[in-house]
Image 1: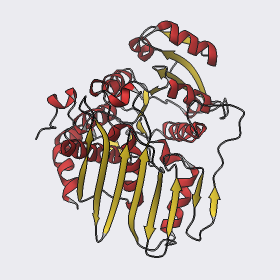
Image 2 (image 1 turned 135 degrees about the vertical axis):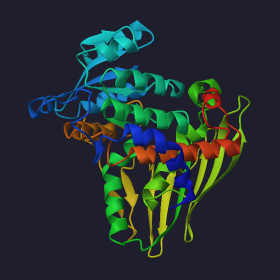
Image 3 (image 1 turned 60 degrees about the vertical axis):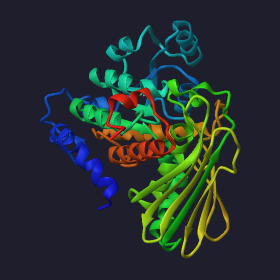
Amino acid sequence: MHKFWIQILYKSRNMLNRQLSCMQGGKVCPCRDSKPNAESNAETAKPLRWGMAPVSLIADDFVTALKVLPYQHHVVTACTSTYHSVAQAFAAKHNIPHVYNSFQELARSPNVDVVYISSLNPFHLEICRMMLDHGKHVLCEKPLCMNEDQTLQLIGHSHSKGCFLMEGIWSRCVPAYQYIRKQIEADALGDVLNVKCTLGLPMQKVGRVMRRSLGGGVTLELGVYALQFALWVFGYAPSNVAANGKLNEDGVDEEANICMKFGLGRAAEIMLSSTKRFDNKAVIQGTKGSITVPDYWCPVKILDVNGTEKTFPLPKSGLSTYFPNRLALSFEAEEVRRCITEHKSQSDLFTHKESLELSYIEDQIRRQLGVIYTEDAVANFFK
């Protein structure tokens, strides 16, 4: 076992042993004191009722993506926002019946089964805990929390409440990833030795990316996609993480160059920027060939091992989204529905263990770059 993962196990053992003792195979154990969220097969056949907390551009795209799915599977029943007028306009646009004045009101709503959380990063932990406290399942946008310590807290809390929790790594749910996984397992690439990822977008005017108080930084905003891709390809945590980069005047990373070693000559090289545009692709290199994945956070085409282009069309729809390829969020929504219907506490496509690994790596990168958030002061970040 890599020393990387041993540290996480050591820190989390006492907490998770207590809180996960009644978990069996990723499912909520029926002996738990908490009331099951799906009480019968008849109830799980009903549409999954979504709440948006808060409304946002990505929440708008998520609701739009739900519209390509059967109404019998998904329905948006509630939303909230810091500004009530914004929530009302959002509800009017998408025909959402319930508009709440606060997160607390939405959490208490009997009309919501699962909540999609797309708030600013520093508020993820608080809002997620609130929803879980009221028996709501949670799909939270990445990053799940600000650091590893918060991630441990939240995952343990979700298990104690008997609710489903998933970090919104929607990439794992798209058809292209399923195809690439089959190619890797079929040995089409041979032994995978190297993964290279670039992701750079000019985001100087986006406050949530450039400001430390808003949980900004290229590692948490864009790096998540590259890091999860490398973890997914190799299938285990790296033995070493090295990073260098550049901070802006507010103390958050606007550039990051990351190298992760996976042992036996295997490595991932990642280049990130929130000020420059890169070619934004991933290349998986094996002993028999390579696969190139443009826009690897949500690919609709790849260059396969044999050099041919293979496409993965988005769901057919006349609907438009604010951000490219966001109709693919429908694949993530269906995965959430499947897991909740099967009474699972987590998705096999992106597990809680992977969220912990990801948060640990993000912390290691930030330590090396010198990016410190207010939330780190009350965590184990400086140890």
